[in-house]
Image 1 (cartoon, chains in turn brown, yellow):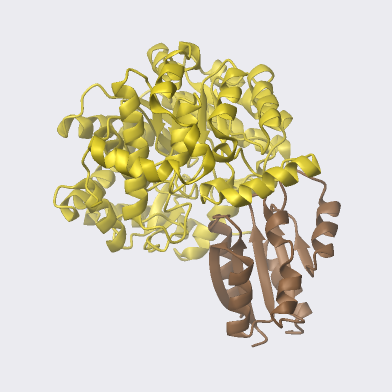
Image 2: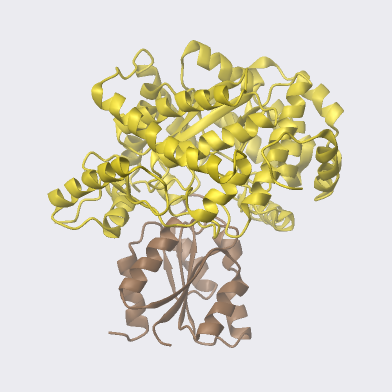
Length: 136
Length: 484
């Protein structure tokens, strides 16, 4: 389904508040949200995307290990046959207050279509996702 | 082992211990007798329990940061900076998130990558991987007591290693380090595993070594109504002292309304002491910890200092024994050591200014204390009833039935039916009670306060209020009013 998205918090991260808010906001915006919640592995994201025929995977990471946890996700998606799936990442993606541009570039180099800094309101990623999926 | 709130026998403890120490190779470094000898030599100024007791007697509030990085030398440098430059009174060692999930193999990868990248790739200190010797190196390199701070549902091996390593306090509890920190760990397991950690401290106490235990007060740190966090704190306190813990620090996370925050701290101490008395626990050295705002922070550093200072002021006015300090980098994630030191300095400046002041009692304060106590009692009475007198069993049943229910928690063993929102004064109230067994009077009162806010804002009471409140502090206000 075109408006189906997989949402979750990757790795050993248990930050649940933003996850619940994103679930609410994307659902309100008309998406079918498959929320796999906190503490989710790359495999959990991929399996959920295959099972639900999702068109995007939204990865949150708040605890700083995002860089290690996200590495290889694009390759694994391709191996699993999720060729054109959109990959978004957002949150406090790295350890410490680092300059944003290099962090963004690192994640784009890993194969993420869009990367969001801390404190991005849900409305922005909702707008971007609708544009990327030609939903409006 | 069947879960009950009863001190473990030596046989029970030693049986489990054998398995625990085999979970990772560094477990073999722990020798209880040798560790006891080492701990006896730790000077009083580096003993967490003794330092807290002294602060309580003097009526001062101590400042403690959070901090931890992947590598031992860098971690020592960080703690020394917080001690020397920041002026911290107590030191932490925040443990990384892989250790919290017992994923020691992944810690090893993080350690290697940190060496290669020359920056910490882990969000804390992987104490299990580094082992007893390196924990001792840390405590020997500083002049202050060191505590492990984390979020580990099964902290048994970690507790063994840090205490043997000379760290004289451990944060956590079977509820507070499970429900907000895990998705699928049963409460039966996490309560048993934390009984082990408490029993370990009890065994040290019986050998004449004072070690402090601190249940994690703020839970999800997001609009948790004070009566819910106080109920959990009192339960975890009772479970700990049953296992022989003597130095206990109960905590509370700042909500933001001064009267409510001070009332919550006062209610917590008074009620915990009442329960200890009723259940026959004597000689408990009870101290308190106040956590500066745990929710979303402003990105702007000057504004972040405003939030930090407000937390420091409330901690001082509430008479907290210690305050856990935030940093101006909070919105961006893990702070540099400089930012961390800056947070401590701002905090200590405010603590010092308010040293001679306490919030005078008033009708508003008295009524808030009365309300929090009444709400907490409603919850605790039902927990004891569900457990037929056994607090551990009652706690498991209370989460099953939503009698205990923590907002925004990730655990599937949490009902997630209650919703909080702020009233017009910024105090956190119950919007949805779920299955929490409050009296009709209390329910009506909470509702009335939220209806007053709804009326002022020209909207209905509902989840949008909660969402607006989650983001409000980051945007610069306490109450999430609708945007004009």
